[in-house]
Amino acid sequence: MTLAELESLILDRLLEAQVCMRSLDARGVRPSTTTTWWPEIGLSYHEWFKMTVQQLADKIPIDDKVKQRPPRPSAAAISRMEETWGWLAGIRNENARKAVAIKVFAWVHKESTSTLARNMGINRVTLNRRYNAGMEELMTRFCKTSVLPDPADEDLVHHFRPNQAMSNRNIAASAA
Image (cartoon, rainbow, N blue to C red; front, side, top):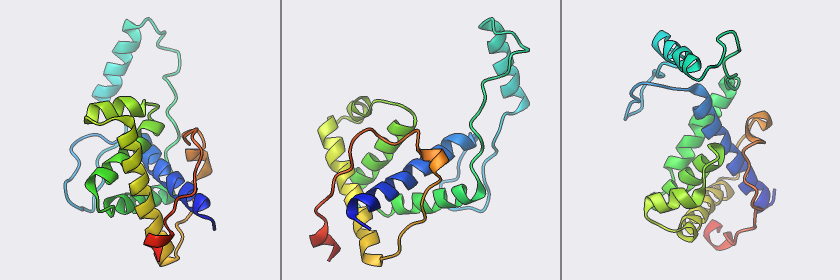
């Protein structure tokens, strides 16, 4: 496997994890430590009522179907998501870890990375440099272990891949 293919595989898994989080529609307080329970998901009666009132306010006929939600991710996709968040937590440099998370979030939620960078108090070039450092660390880790991650679900990630080209990175020195 080439470095570009490895980078693409890692990026697909990061995108899949973000898409899974977005699709789960988790609400409530999330735990700050590892636990064995999941937060509630789905619409409560009050949320459904608010949505119906909003439809009336927007003059959308009630008999029209409510905007279709994306399908729930499979159990395997959720397991891969949890594994992928572990990879992300393993990036030693906090700024690089944040940059990877911010860029993946921006691609999935169709946000501008430049705007998010400005909100962080940095420019786009700095965000890209930190993102590249985080991706290089992830790629180096997989090169050292020679255990490749499972591929992401193509149906979940193909809409969210960034339009920028993947480039080979010079990580031979750090992988050795």
